[in-house]
Length: 468
Ligand code: BGC
Image (tube, rainbow, N blue to C red; front, side):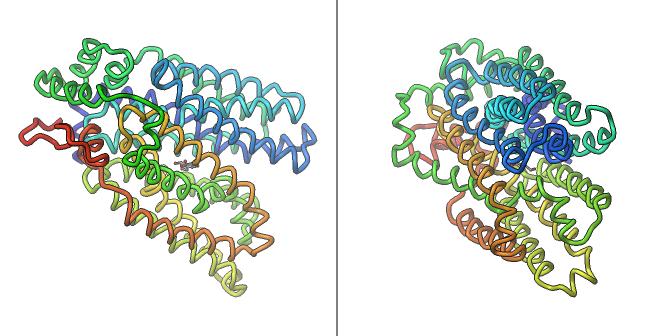
C-alpha cells in the first residue's frame, strides 16, 4: 500500500507520530460518545436519574462541546493549536474524574458539560493541527487518523462497558477511565512542535517554522523554502474576522456548514447511541444486541482504515459520494424492514446487515471527509474561526438529532424516521455533488488560491515543484 510505504520515510513517520498524538483528542471524543449509553444503565439506578436527568447527562456534553468549539476557534489562533490541545487534555482529566465521583445527577451533568468543553475543542483542533503539518500527498490519510481515533475510542468504550458491567462502582470506572487518555493528550501535546502555519501567521517566526518543516520534509531545503514562501504569501494578507463573511469565503463557509450538518442529520449518532435499542426493536435479546453493537463498532474502525489507505489516491469526492449513496440505501432498507411485519419475523438479519452497511458507508464517507475537508478549504487567515463555526454546527446538529430520535420513532414511526434520514441523505448527496470541491493532492495554499480565486502565485501549483 502506497500510503503505508510512504510512512516509512523519516519525515513522514515524524508527522504520523504527531498525528497520532494529536489524534488522542479524537479518541477522547469517541470514548465519550461510546461510553455514555452503557454507563447510563447504572447511573440511572444509582443516582435516581429520571428521564429529564438522563437526557441532561447525555446532552450536557454536546452543549459543552458547542461552547468548547467556540472558545477553541479563538484559542487556536491566540495561543496556538498545540497549547489549546494541552489545555483540552487537562480539562478532560478534570472532567472525567469529576464525573466519576459525582454524587448527584446534577453534579454529573455539570462534570459532563466540562468534558464537553474539552471534547468540542479537541474535535477540530486535532484535524487542524495535523493538516497544517502533513505533506499534501498524504494529508487525507493523516488527518483521518483523527477519525480513526474517534472510531477506536467508541469501540474501546463499548468494550470497557462490557467488561466493567459487573464491577463495583461500574459506571464510575467507565467514566473515570477517560482520565487516562486525557492525561496522555495533555502530556503528549506538551512535547510536540507548533505547526509551521501558526508559527508564520501568528508568531511571525519563520526560523522556527523552517526547523519544523525541515524535519517533516526530510531536510529537502528547496521544498521547505517553497512551502514557507507560499505560507508567508497567504499570511501577509490582512486578517479580519469580517473576512469570514466576504463572498469568496462565504461559499466555503456554506460548504463546511453543509458537511457539518448533513454529517449529523443522516442519523449517525442514533446508530452510535442507540444501536442496541434499534436492534432490540428488531427483536434481538439484550445480550445479543450488545454483541451485535460491538460488530457495528468494529466495522466503523475497519472501514475508517480503508478510507485512510485510499483517500489520497482516489480523492475525497468519490468517498463522500459513494459513502452517502450507501447511507441512503441502507436507511431505505432499514425502513422497509420496520414496515414489514413478515420481514421482522423471518429476516432479523436484515436489520443488522443494514446497520453494518450504514456504518461502513459512513466510515468511508461523511465520517472522515467532513473533518478532513474543513481543515482544508478555509483560508489560513480565518481557518481557526471558520472551522470553529462548522464544528459548533456539527455538535448542535448532533444534539438535535439525539434528542428527537426516540420521539420521532413514536410520532412518525420507526420506518418513517429512517426514511426521513434517507431523504435527508438524498439532499446531502445533491449538495455534495454540486458544491464540494476536490482537494486531493493540493497544498493548502493552492486550495486557498483556487477556492477564493485569488490571483496570487499560490493560486496555482507551480509546475515542476518538487512533490512532497
Ligand atoms: C462524528 C461523530 C460520530 C462518529 C462516528 C464522527 O465523525 O462527528 O458524531 O459519532 O464520527 O464514527
